[in-house]
Length: 299
Ligand code: AMP
Image (cartoon, rainbow, N blue to C red; front, side):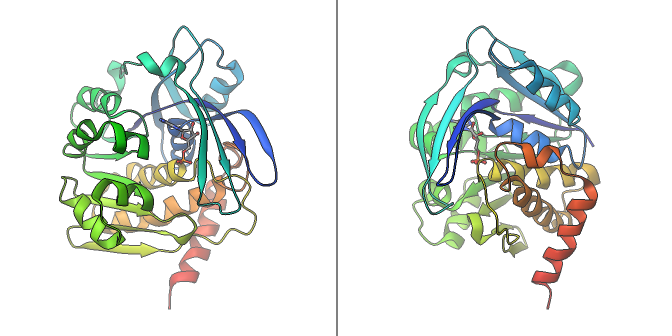
């Protein structure tokens, strides 16, 4: 079933303890779309500047992403730079240049307004809401967010949260949003804000989903050679939503399986800089890790 993502396309500069890469193709929607495209056709709505490399658009198209909703605006592409110190779970943002994102007004192409599965990737809540209102009758909508919006656009974020079916957050964001330290309590408090489900990610310690009668937890797939964790959260969401869209299901049993596919997609993402590991990812490789992860968690 049709899957749409609205979010950022970016050029990221990433520093790890081992290496530094400049102007790597990134962005919340980019990671999501390439991850999801391993499961289902996906359309992307976002904005880039005139400096966006032709090859990067081709890369997205080559991955099976419908880029008709990617607007080319006057100015420079959004840029983000960050550094990971020793612990992969700790990221410091060094710089954010909004550039064309500062005036972004998302326009969902007519052909994509009937999308049934919608992911509002990390972007300002105003952009998320504008996009959400253009999709006519989504069957399942999930949003992401980050500390910046929790701090500075809380009311707008809460308004979007009341309209979506699910939210995906990391541990730090869940604590910031709710003021609860304990993650189970934090997840419960998030559910009190409107969505039916909350997916809470704990970096290399795994993730859980809660909502209604559903409470399901998973460890991360054990990766020995982490190269760059950027995009792990977005590609998790890509695997998760891509699986649901492919199945046209979002019942609790499907959500449990989606947690495995999200976990696995993220595990590939972190094994290379940027989207490199995701573009080379095939369904047999995903399924092989799916079976391995099942082995790890089954008694
Ligand atoms: P993740 O590692 O999954 O949390 O996402 C990393 C991606 O988020 C990077 O590729 C960045 O370009 C993108 N990003 C960073 N800051 C923002 C922001 N303020 N709004 C939207 N996307 C952002």
